[in-house]
Length: 200
Image 1 (cartoon, rainbow, N blue to C red):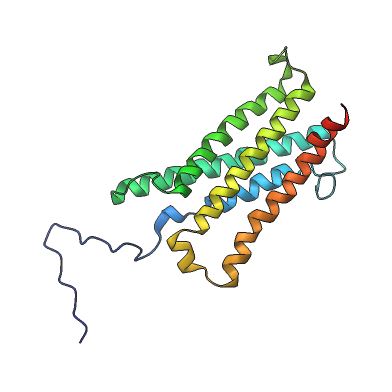
Image 2 (image 1 turned 180 degrees about the horizontal axis):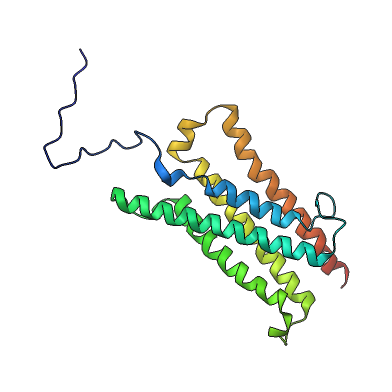
């Protein structure tokens, strides 16, 4: 016969088994939302797939800004909820590769958004040309995007995710950030890096 678990002493909570129970608020889908909004923010400038191709660049920049801010808010919200949940459960913070890269991604995205203010007001950087500022912002943004995709993929390798999503579904989901990374890399390279090289 299956033995029943003994009740915990009064006033004490029974320790939870590792990996059991519901995932809780730490698995709020802020990472997919962050990745989706960040991808759409970059694809706004795509000459092939942008839904705003007929609009002026000024409109595209505003939409890019709005989507990036929403992505950053999702990331900050997720980071806050995860930290609070770990504090409630007495667990260590940022001890996995997913946690460390996720924290680094949020910090990097915050600095990237702050750096984007310079493009809105280029007169703040008098010693830099607008073309050079755009090049640096695009390339650093690409690095941040790849960092976010790496964090997302590491999260897909976690124990909870690999037990919840198995088989071909796991491989298909893992393929999504890889394909979007290649698309964004191609877009930034064609728009800035290859064009810059051809000018020399």
